[in-house]
Length: 478
Length: 150
Image (cartoon, rainbow over all chains, first blue to last red; front, side, top):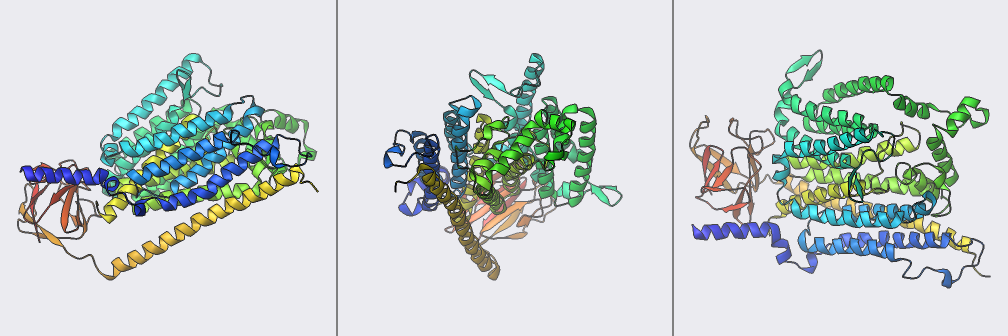
């Protein structure tokens, strides 16, 4: 018996620390390191460009005007943290996916640089260093997530706890917002912990994905059979649908309560993705979409601010020479954000004005909701396409991790978390370009905002852990 | 002629765009190589069906209607559960949809519970974490007891 017990312990140790014990240079994450080279160059180059852009453009260039090491400290700090993450992961989780961190690191670097550039123009001179601190905290949280998630079953087993925790956090915010009776202030969805304003809604979306993944993977067979028939559609038994609908309904109500339409849209989109992945039935998606259209129509009729958002989408900007007084009035007041955003995009052209050389600060809330436009103006169409390409690769990699995962819970979790990035990027980028009503959700990793950066890094941490578990399972414990 | 600053900034900008697309290309190359490798791997696994390395023989069927003495083949990666995606599908109410995960590494079997409701044991030890097992060991999945054989 005693011999068996030590054997079992040994096996446990191998699973959690086996790789670190047998660390060799072959195990080092060389691929990740080689993928980091170009992002680091880009970050340094753009930092230099940003510092030079403040000088007189007609002066002659000399090596003296190049920034010193001291000026580049923010960029070097970010590079150092990313390298530290690379080394730490090589020793502890060498089999975790090697593409995620370079992609995300480049996005965070660009986000940090854009915050540095926009800070002085938006009246917060230290916006860049704040964003840098958030990114560093985010990377630390990402590593912590990797270490804390020793067993994925914790996430699955306590699914109701996670979901209720998220809902209680957002509920507190709602109470807070109602108490101050200031639903129009931009920070009404924040909870203040000392000097930090956190948005619990960012965490709620992760908790909800964990809940959906756990619930759908457990009721997989029952839900995909479908027993209730309505016409040609089969609906799942109501008992199995109940908890799903309850969580979804609570989340949607909370978001409508704090007037975060964008987040409600995001949560509903994730729900659609996951129910399709979980059941592989297009009929559920069709029914859910119909429900969404009905809900959207009710929302449109009830809330004036929803109508305003839609008005901006239908607004004719191209024909600006023949605007009536009412239209001009709209463009200068309610529609200012969208119209100025489009002007900024068009002034960027194909190659952009160059970082620090445009005038994106005419657009209200440029640093978070409209940051896509700022990139469009200063990096141009070419830069925007590259950024969208980075997002595409990130999302591809996330779904790839989902496909390779070994059980349905991990698959659903990875796919659901990746869908958060996909839907969020789509909704806010489309809104910035006047294809969808503008809603206040951040562009992952590029927008300024602490909660959003940290939540996104938690997602990356979970994805890395799932990919590590899968690879370890495939290649054995040693 | 001294270099004007705005010309230098233009060069930096073009360099930036070139670097961005180089990075995208590098990532795509890594991904293609990766996909090719896993395609080769999956072709190999299609060619030879997973070898049967061992068996689970039902010793005590508990409340279920599985006959004692039934033999289940064990592939190098085997999952046991009620769901249709499992290698070994056991249709009994005491079995969770994904119940137990058994895999072989260097001729040692490892048994781990896959988050089931009724648990998994190896020689009466709960297999919350991966437990090693060898031929002759008793593996209990929910209320059904198996013996691991070669």
